[in-house]
Length: 120
Image 1 (cartoon, one colour):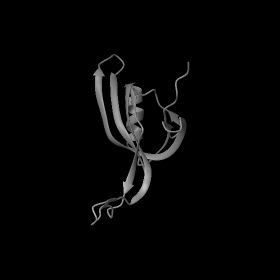
Image 2 (cartoon, rainbow, N blue to C red; image 1 turned 60 degrees about the horizontal axis):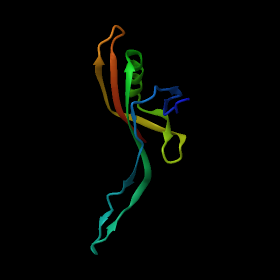
Image 3 (tube, rainbow, N blue to C red; image 1 turned 60 degrees about the vertical axis):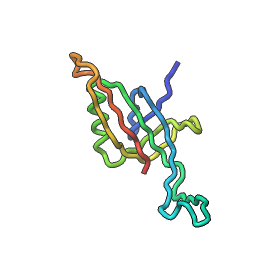
Image 4 (spheres, rainbow, N blue to C red; image 1 turned 90 degrees about the vertical axis):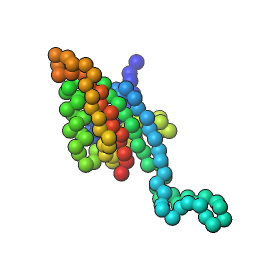
């Protein structure tokens, strides 16, 4: 049985993540809020902005590759969309990058890497 390719960065297929979640948020203007009549008004500027919190358990080789992607201003991300069950592409950036040593090995360690991808 083949695994789904959940993420690609600039055409590079990433390893299978330990955790993967697709969140879609609306961007609202400051003009929204409660009216004088007491009703809520939303001024949605942009609907369905994607953010993807993800965690990987990787070797030192992949740690280096993921760190290099983190330093880029913009990444073309192919991601598995949970609404359509298809792969979509978006311009994103990495936020909240964390790398932690899980186990020291003779091959420079086993690492947990977590971050959130945010759509432009």
